Length: 175
Image 1 (cartoon, rainbow, N blue to C red):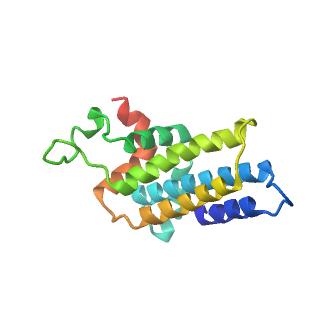
Image 2: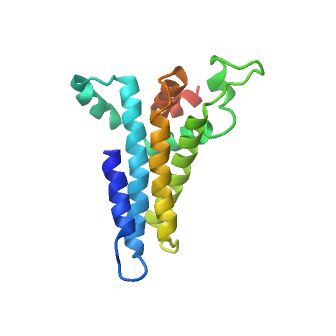
């Protein structure tokens, strides 16, 4: 799904509108780019939780409906920062300085998710916001690049933890 949404975003952003691109097309492109990243992360999280076998697909699809945009944004806000809340990291492995180190690919995709959700809100709800084709195409490239970088991240406890936090962050931080 995420690849189709990236292609859709590109197509909308590159439409030949005879002169200046239509804001409606650029706004929909921003939204499609956000949803590409959203669905990629949800799919990765469901695979981490349920499994990757074909016969588990129905379970993944059912679980995917439980992800909440604001919860994912909150989790990504924390993972994009230098350190997670103490209540979350108290039992995680730490470096010699006593810090839990968040892998760079997780920080980067978290930062992009947070920023992209804000841009999608602007695109969908703030008609005074103007989008430029070059900015939108750059955003779409960033989504594709960050997805690719994340897929190269080795299967690790850090990766699994991040993905599961996208679903459970609200409950995890309220304890």
